[in-house]
Length: 200
View 1 (cartoon, rainbow, N blue to C red):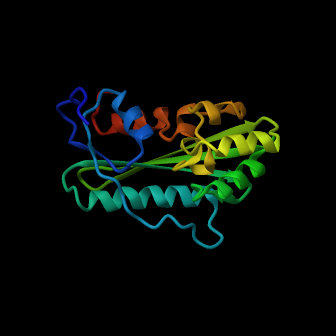
View 2 (view 1 turned 45 degrees about the vertical axis):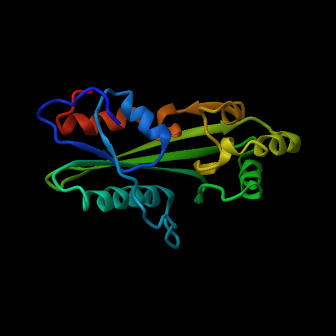
């Protein structure tokens, strides 16, 4: 993706993500970057806490891509939707998406998005965004209608995307970072990029 050039002092930037949302949000900052999705096992470890999980997966994504892009800065992010200690990943089918909606129905849950930046000289810079989201009460008919549209829930943690009409209509309140819920917390991300010389 080609955007405006980053500052002359900053190394080339690689985004370790296939997420269109992250690509758009990073591009909106006016940076030029290469896209190189990470292919790692994102299965939670036994008894792994949500904050530990999302930070570990993000580090592993960044490290995997950095190993193939020497001399460049590599940015990675990962988002987890959590109900207590339970981590909700990306639903594999409509039934799983419906189960997630029932679990989130009328409740507060936490959305964690970790960001990691492996610099061109091997340093690892990290940040974590934590946001509380509350769903409105949903009827079963609401859930069934929601899952009929696959683009609402496919490929997104927790089975909903805040920025979509379907997902956004179910959210009553957000306390924290909206951009973090969408997948790339801009406050934390720009702070890391500034430390590497990017003009953002």
